[in-house]
Image (cartoon, rainbow, N blue to C red; front, side, top):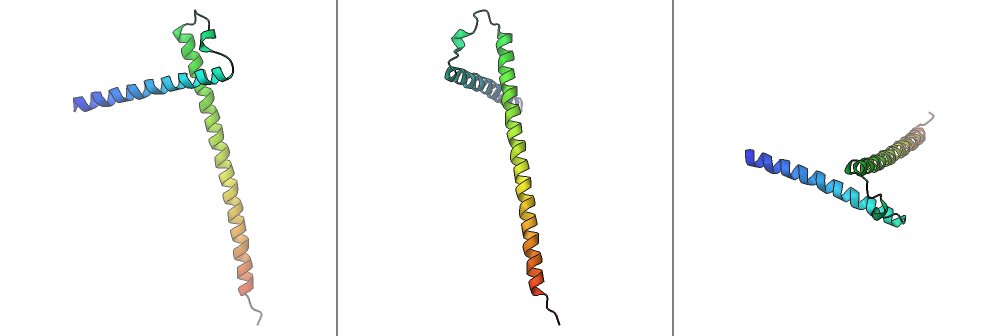
Length: 102
């Protein structure tokens, strides 16, 4: 049991480190595409300042992701509502076709 727990903890730490590393690489590529290089950061930038910048970027991207998800959900809800209205209208027209005047 203890061995499996330590393996799980190790995997979790590794995943977190990998995510941070990938975020840093992503930021680096983004800044390179904007002609801003990591080498241009001030020499005296502390790990704390760099971590804050990384966190701000991660927060910005998360916010953007959630906004996109919200928009997609709103669109899906609007499409579903439109579909329901269309189905109801078709059903009503079919029901009217079935009516007979005696």
